Image (cartoon, rainbow, N blue to C red; front, side, top):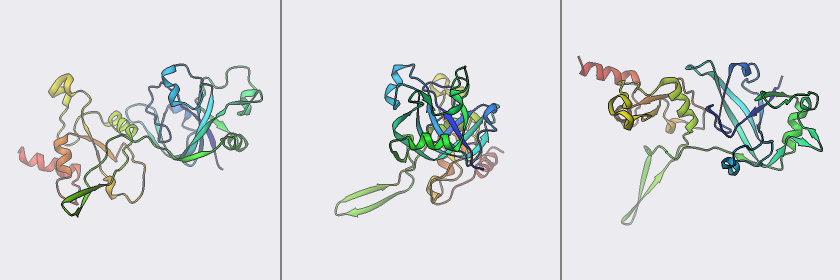
Amino acid sequence: MQKYIILTENDESNWLDQTGVLYHFPPRYKKLIDPGTQVVYYKGRLSNIQYKFKRLSDEPHYFGMGMIEKVWPDTSTKNYFASIRDFRLFTEAVPFKVDGEYLEVKANEVKYNYFRGNAVRMLTEEEFKRITQGANKLESQYYKPEEEYDQSHISTVPEGKQIRYYVTKYERIRSYRDAALKMHGYNCTVCDINFKEVYGELGEGYIHIHHTKPLFSLEEATTPDPRTDLVPVCPNCHAMLHRKKGVLMTIEELRNIISKKNI
């Protein structure tokens, strides 16, 4: 049976969330968040003016919809991650109250603040339709990728004395990097160097993230699993993993090379 839920997004949060891409949540919501569940995004009232430009409204409102794609445990804590697919951002805020009545029916039936402490909430199909049909219009799929992109596939086409470079850009979502670092730490997975230990404050937080499945090899957009698809590596090891043109060396293969050199 199709499930429908609300996902609350806070302007200020310690959770590793990224709108329409990744949702980080505690175990108490595990039974509500399953692959295939339809979701509606919700924000409470604006409390910090610096986030005003990132919102559709200062008041509590619904602002987007999507579907849970995958769920996996955060191995460094007891929490979980869920990836979101088919996310669509509303062009205008849908208010949580219309004509004095909450769109979430249960909120009208309780005396306490129903929205406080219930970051993930069940919806009926009727409530889901009431909220999403109230959206003025839906935009196409929305992402906030990192500014970095993979330049390993650059083709050149000569035109007279000029050479033009055509670069294929691949989206890299920062939340996935953050999740991978939270799970694996900042030591290089191959040689075990830790830049903070070697360089002190200068090296704190510095490490590359390696895709065990290179982005250029994927025929369509996919959701990486930070447990297995993303690993921290130092720049030297990262370069060596990609050293052979058209061939991606595995972490274990490069470890073996280093081990043999150190015998």
